[in-house]
Length: 39
Figure 1 (cartoon, rainbow, N blue to C red):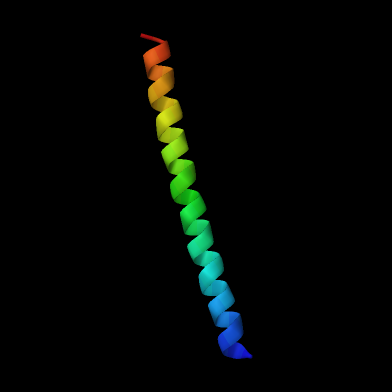
Figure 2: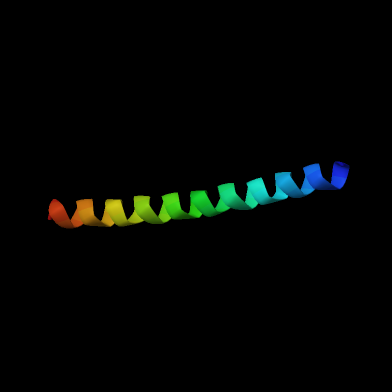
């Protein structure tokens, strides 16, 4: 029972890290495209 809870917490953490990475990539791309637009 405890092991199952731990693994679900770990997979949730990995998922949130993955989403955070994707978010950072999109923000960086958005920032760069905005810089290009205002040149």
